[in-house]
Image (tube, rainbow, N blue to C red; front, side):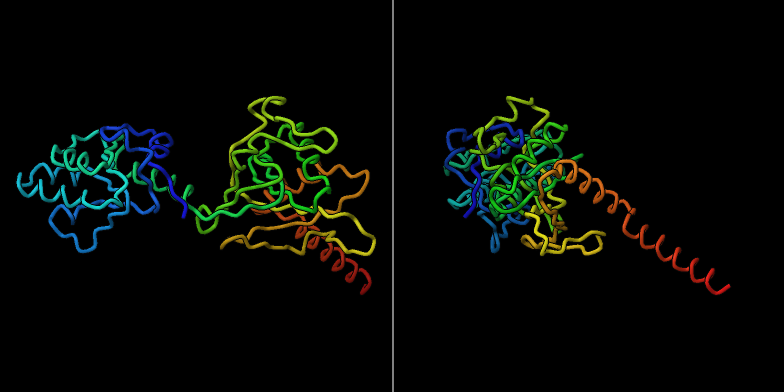
Length: 314
């Protein structure tokens, strides 16, 4: 099961540790769902999701400060009684009820605070947890950022993926991952790709070895992650194989629940693959903006046929 330590959450979401700092690496979050324990403050614990991060906003804190002291002690103890509860998070730098602090300390549960409003804090933490806890696939390929478009270059080993990526980097584009790409589903329509930690900023070139792209080309030549918008599959050219020449035969590849467009480009001596892939990315972006060169050609062809037919009938 994927899990995120509370320490990782603190570091990534710019949170302040109010109490329980020594337990940050011992407590783990296993779900991206976040609970706002409003009903629990009234005493209703039948469906208390103890395994979730517990978020207190203005509503919960205001209600807690108005509770009867004895009731408050009992409720806060119940909120903390499960070993599954990873932490409590307080928005807007609101004051932490003393009873909650005492109960959390007694059960080794950290309390965190943030300056953000509750809604923004909820969105930020949820996005982070969904990304970290999402199911991942490791794909063989090279992921590059071309004009802000995430392009995954795939193909058999030795077809020239890394060399093409190097040429793209020299043309001003950015490397995300070489050889292995960690892919996860960001939402219903988006895939996100990143490099495994051990391979970040590294590129393997046969005959040269492993090079550090960030060290050689600067910070502007790399990026930590990106959405995957297009797959470019490199395949050795063969006279016996038919390749799409007009761009009308669109292919789709399903990864998790997302379908990603894929084009296949033949690799042949003398072809500049970097320029071709760069053009393919620009052409794909033009299509997403409503301009399709293939349709323009087909319209021109139909118009020419129509004009010729009219001339022949005269």
